[in-house]
Image (cartoon, rainbow over the protein chains, first blue to last red):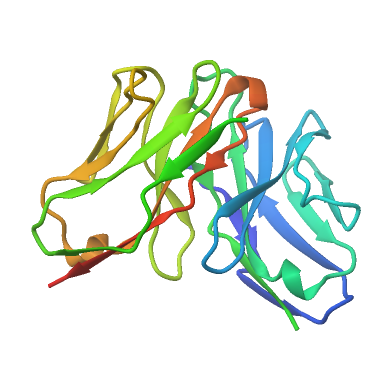
Length: 115
Length: 113
């Protein structure tokens, strides 16, 4: 069965440093997403990406965040200058256009710890 | 805006008990509805889904029926096991929001042997 993969599984960084979280979506999918989950809290939408541009973003997704699909297979989330409150589990997801249901394909997540 | 409301946890049950976790939603149009499960220390896994009214999603003994008249998608299982202990999330998505998932707060389920 196809799957979304994410690397690294755990990233520890110091406050103020840049991090890049990587995701490889399912190959024929066209929509890509990042979500995050602060420990013990609700899953929150960050951004959706389609046709090489951001299609929607939440209030959380401020200027410190950016996404990119650099090579047609990877989908990355960059945090320019990490803050303590960025510590969370970050999930990548991908979906296929045109179906009634397109969700369900989540990566295993990257746990980001900002110290 | 669209939203999902789940019953608060934790829900604690004994093994082989009947499980219901309530989920109601508010949404315009015709959302698709999902239950995701998150086992301790793991990522999000799709448990089941339903795309239209009266659809029943089922998987691993869990079931949920999409009830448009009550805007509900309650999760049920007839006989829970210790291995079902996890956090369960109800969510919805719609085509006109680019399939962005809108999540409930999650319900922690604890099954005691």
